Image (cartoon, rainbow, N blue to C red; front, side):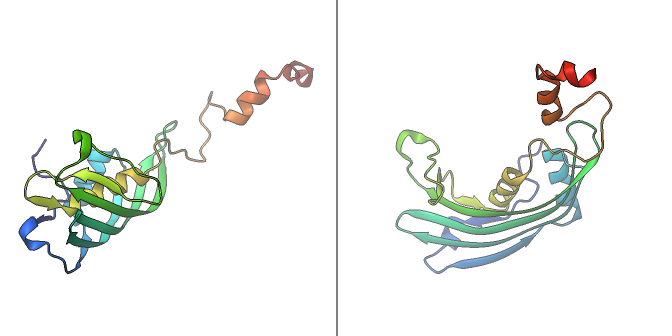
Length: 166
């Protein structure tokens, strides 16, 4: 494993000021292939992010969206399951987090994480947001022999299932 993330786009803290810095990031073929391997995807055709970065008294704010398109393997059959993801990013990086860890706020609020070092990797922030948008259990429409749906399992467990077989 490498020390540099696959979609790294680092900004030095000294380059982030009170004026909003707008960034358009797009993963090239090698970065997409490496991210696909990291996240267990069949392919990643598109990954881009539109971000705004700004420093204020509370820390560094990173907001925007990440978009991805590709396919991931079905958990049952391994068949490709296409995805089209748009994930919002609303992150505050702070120098001192109470308790020393990540703080999860209400959905309407932003996430707060500690800022470690003197660099913000907005590419890695975008990659992690993209990964959160992936379906953890993608299912294709392809029928897998011996595998039934949850609805079919509930019907089969019904005490009246025996009557239907008669």
